[in-house]
Image (cartoon, rainbow, N blue to C red; front, side, top):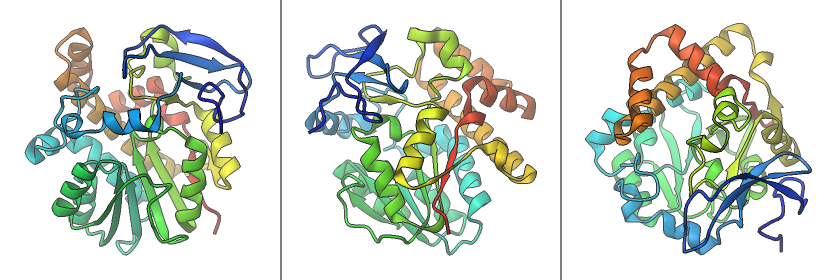
Length: 312
C-alpha cells in the first residue's frame, strides 16, 4: 500500500515543505508539500478515506462545510450563483461533442446543476457520479439523469462508452488521482474527451500569492499544474493536448468558455466571502468583458492546462 507521504505521481518519498498548516481536519495538522522528484504538490499527511467521505456530508452541500461557497441544495440559489460557471462548462462540452446524442458523464455532480443544464441544452444520455448519497439522490431527481452514489473507481459504469467525461473542481479532492485517470481512460469511448476545471499551481496567480493562494484549503488534497497533469494523462493512456495545438476557432471557443467559468467562480466565491478577498473577487467579476475574461484566464493559468483525449 502506498504511504500517505509518498508522491502519488512518481512514488518518491522525498518532498519539501511549501505551505504552513492550512487547517485542522479530524484534529490533525496538515501541510502542503512539493515532491522533490516531479514537482507535484499535495497535502501531507493525506486524509484517510473515511475522513474524505466525512467532509461531504449534508452540511457541506448546504454551504456549512469546509467550503462556504458551496450551496447546492437551494436550486434557485445554485442557478443564480453557479449559472455562469455551468454555462461555460456546457459550452466546453458542446465545443467537442455538439451531437446531443453524446453520452456524457459528470463526475462529482453535486446535486445535479450541470446535468440539469445539459438536459435543458438537449443532451439526452446523461450520467452522474457523486460521492454523497444525499447529493446523488437530489441530482437524479432534479436532472432525470442516471446518477450513481459512490467513487467513480468503484461504481458500475459501462466501459468504453462515454463521449465526454467532465469533472468540475473535482480532481483536487481525489485521494488517488492515478486510479481516477486510469478509470477515465477505461470509461471513455474512442475519440472521447476528458474535461475538467482545477487550479493551476504554477499559474501567475498561484505563484504571486504563494502560501496565501486561496486554493490552499483543507479539502484539496492535490495541486496540479500543466506538467504534472500531462504526465498523469499520458501514464493513463490518454492523449494530452495543449490548447495551443487546437485549431484556431476551437481554441478561441475553449478560451471563451474557460473565461465564462472563471468569472463564474469569482462570482461564486465573491458572494460567499464577506472579507477583502470576496470584495476583490466581486469587483473583478463586475468588470466582466471579453478582455477581462481573457486576462483572467491568463493570470489564473487556465490557458495552459492540457486537455485529455482517448485516441479513436
